[in-house]
Image 1 (tube, one colour):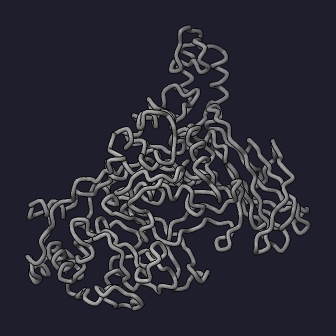
Image 2: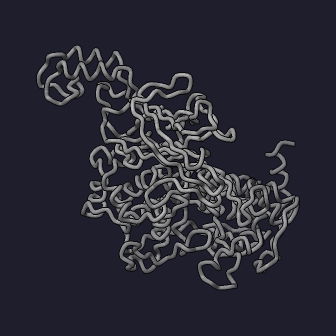
Image 3: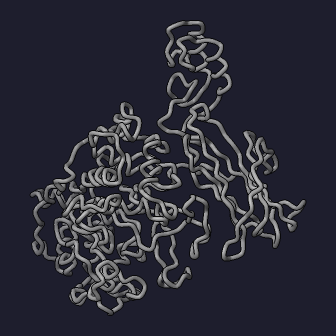
Length: 602
């Protein structure tokens, strides 16, 4: 029998009038200290999706909160080994990949758990959508309703500011977005000098429109706040304003609650009733489908993570975590605070305590004793959860849930190429660390090496030509660099290479390779694979591209030659250097850049 027929049969078998829909979601609660303005919303959207908010340009707020891929949570699965430090054990956590650990100077620094690989958070990311209705947010509620300005220590919002409190956490977390010791002075200085969304592409119309006339962060902050000053409080106010517009209130359930009795299928109505009869809606209360409380459902032993108790100090809060919303739960990639459950079927198994799922009794909420998930009701329950609570705008990435493409959405840049690696002492091959995107004006661009001979001398070869047989023939050779020693005894180092903000570099390529003096390597020198660097700047001009397709080709050359010798010319006519004439200087520039793709680093 097909699934639809099963659900229809079940709908006839289950009561259809047990549960009543609640009133619609209330008005968005904007605190009086941070009222809504459109300028603030767009600035917040830009900040939320700008990877430059992180110390190394690899993580945006939106990296871990993608609407259509995970209901505003993180679709990526990073493995944190938990308190025992071992992977493949029951306390493993599926969290969010963050940054490679770096010291206060931005140099790579081995982490006790993750060494020189990407760190992973100790809890799964909560959705950024519909978070505006909770008093305290994060799994443990540490982002409190009273928002304290992290720069001044003053209370900026006495109540209703949990989103602002949350927004200032990740940019200074040395696991999520920062290097050790990063502060707001550094963040403010970076944003003030940065091109907004320099790494993004395919900008939504509202973002593209404002950046066309307000191309810098001081411009954007002046529009939103009246002066160009960038501050932590203003960053938080803008991001929170944007997040308060992410209300997924156009689900089939919302239409049903508004009086459209056909908005839910009979099977979904049966699933709604079954959830109520199973007491699930006592915690996942309508219309939020969360009561915003903190509860211990017995998922894991308290010793692994004491949850809310870590914030309040109250023993009664041991092992308690925020009750998540069920809205858009059908789009999620993982479930529970540790990401332990991967399907809604597994979630129902947990509450039914079947198929190997167990509950740990220490300080478990008494409400768990009355939760009941009868097997006959499960198909309808799943149908309601997966479909009736999904906002189609969220699922499709439509406004207000639209977003730009991030650097991490595209093929890797830098990209490791060739097979020129050469093993060193003990047969170990040194590895290139190449994760920082090479956008124009990136003063923090760097590459690293790990797994090399500890204490050895290394050099970095840089060339404008591709490697031959895996070997980079250098135009520049930087060094010597003395490798440090990881706790595991391997050598590592960082090479910083600031990139100038020069649009003439767009479309250019560089190749980099580490060379390590190592007596155990053939010829006395170990090597990493080469990394190909393609300079990018999504909002930048592309000198020589006269038709706006980001490619300098025969079409552009024909335009320039057709206007050659004309005075009073514009850049679109071929006046690349802006002197008012299309002349030999412009022709030389275009020929030198002929064939360049000024896209996004492909």
